[in-house]
Image (cartoon, rainbow, N blue to C red; front, top):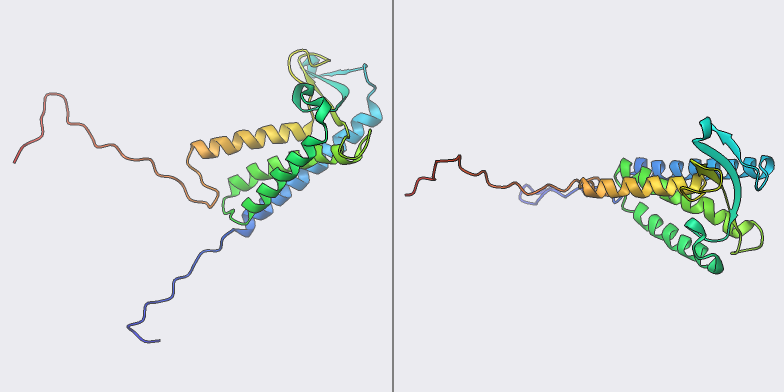
Length: 197
């Protein structure tokens, strides 16, 4: 190579395989645990017969939810799978640029939670795109008196979103970089003025 020619620039890969593995593994584990707990709930719990655990901190109450949180949108069940598919597509696109392990964890939780409830929408009664989501966790009361009854998928979604917000607030980027805050110019001590030329 001619000494006068500039050395070729090595470009970093658009994504880090480890971050994508973390995303995929987190999503798979979230879906597996969610579907397993739903299976156990439908097999062992009866509607209207909650099971009290942890001294009443948590009640296991079988509920089939046709809507979103707090049964919102129960008349438009078919809309939720479409929204989920958009979220899944966005996360897939983000994975092609992912180089941050914490972001891989956050997006994996969101993806796993979204897919866990999507499976219910697609394959549970009353039918395709109209399936009811199985919820079973009620806190502080047996029938969702204090908070909506939820499931593992809902928990994964919530934790993933909170983690993503914290990563954004702390300047951690999905490509592994970190935003630097602007440094303010130090102020002169009280009673002193800057020397003039």
